[in-house]
Amino acid sequence: MSEIKQSWVDSLLVYRDIRMLRILLLGAISGFPWVLIASSLSLWLKEEGLSRSTIGWAGLIFGVYAFNYLWAPIIDRVQIPLLTKKLGHRRGWIVLMQLIILSSLIVWSFINPTQNLALLISVGLVIAIASATQDITVDALRIEQINSNEGKSMAAGAAMAVVGWWTGYKLGGVVALFTAEFFEKMGVVDYWQATFLVLGILIILMNIGLMFVHETIDFNRVNNQKATDQIIRDKLGSNNIITNFVAYITGTIGGPIISFFKKNGLAIALGILGFVFLFKIGEAFLGRMSIVFYKEIGFSKGQIAIYSKGLGWITTVIFTLLGGIMAMRAGTIKTMFFAGGLMALTNLIFAALAWTGKSELLFAIAVIADDITAAFATVAFVAFISLLVDRTYTATQYALLASIGTAGRTTLASSSGALVDWLNGDWGTFFVITTVMVIPSLICLWFIRNKVKIGAK
Image (cartoon, rainbow, N blue to C red; front, side):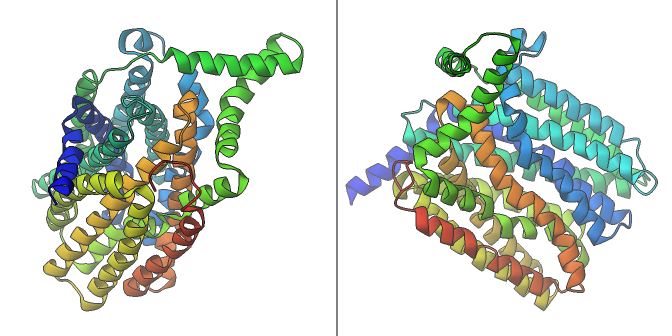
């Protein structure tokens, strides 16, 4: 018994590593833009009188996250003038994207949604592209904080990245909702526009914190990529501008894909991709419409902020750290099976809330259960794909896997509002459908459970 207790203590001590604090900040930087283009944008459009379908289809801007791997090789190699020399390659890209997001918020502060909906969505698309681009380098910088042979630290790092992401998303959401409600009560007509200016201050503060995240130069990664380019050039049989370009494109885009299939084999690789694509679709359908559901059932912005954001953040932090320990001890695959079952059950609680009507107690239970589930699912998922990547192609290969996962959540979930409308506002049936959506991914996971090469399963 004492040995088991000691083992749990050892797992907890991994979180004391200073690198975990840096990863926490990186996660927050990654999660914060979702406050802007998810909950804030959705509620802004809702309060301007736009339909559920319009809000749902506006979520198509999230689709860029599904394709950011296409320009990941550019992020891996192209240097930003001035910023790269002063801040480092990864941090230079992050700061550039943060400046674009900050500028977009300033533009949003001058837009009237009902008169300039196309412009508003276009600016939201710019934020999404900048955020998706930022995520490429954030994930690479996060993975490169941990050595490839530190399995437990990678699981702990995944947990801290998730905690950071939810901290940026949840606490950022609290600030956004309370600020909007404050300006609304003060009589400010364009209270959401004013709120976005306040949120810009948070972006500036996060960039200051980024300066404390160390970045090391991985010469092996650079040399290996150049070696791959040279092999391709040698096979092409000549050395000129055209062959150099072909070698670059093939080595940086094709190399990570070839490496992934070579490592796992065709059947297992396809099983992994199927699981990654399907795992969080049900959660995404629920998440995309949740804030609209809360508003329609009768909860105020303040109540949504307290239960869905503030209370949800505390729950997420605690159970993400516990999820990291579970992933360290039981393995990521067992943790994902556990989380998948929880996801199905949690969605049924939302169905019960829809059928029984407004209830703060049931609302709190549903939010807590949903955040516990999301914590376990996300930490296992992040650890899973982090352990799969080849360090020669960290940014590109992780972006590819993460993009495939995002593709399922964003492209399909964009029809969530239309589904609710098709059901004539029957939220209970909608949540039951999201429960069933979990099953296909678990079937894929069952078939690959004993064959995927990630260490402890």
